[in-house]
Image (tube, rainbow, N blue to C red; front, side, top):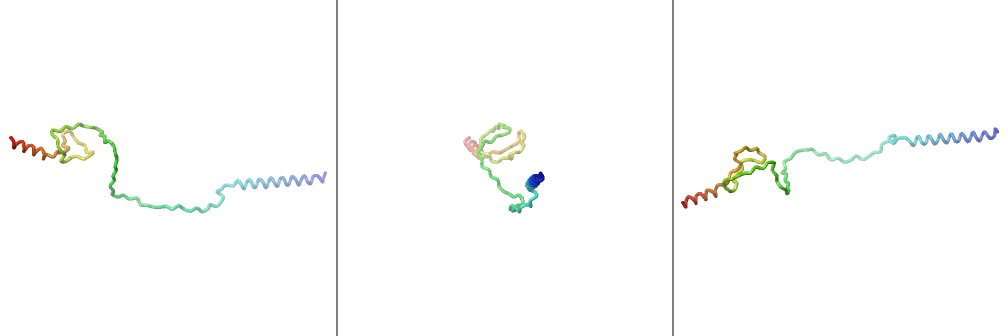
Length: 118
């Protein structure tokens, strides 16, 4: 029996040593990636620009229909071409305010002809 105990102890030692070696390998393999030194990465190229305002004409070409918020019918005593516009787009106007004047040259000419014939 003494002879058979020796190989049994040797077998237990080998098994215990193998288990210890295996568990230490598992623990080393479970280490976090942050333990490793960081690898050098190339820095990205960056362009820097100073923000500034500049005068530029903005031109927009579009097709559409103009709509008014409020439409007011206008009446004229005579027809003709507009000589001057007295208000700007977006101005607030009042009832009775003069908005534009007509070119009176054709009307004055017609009046002169009518007076000459009379």
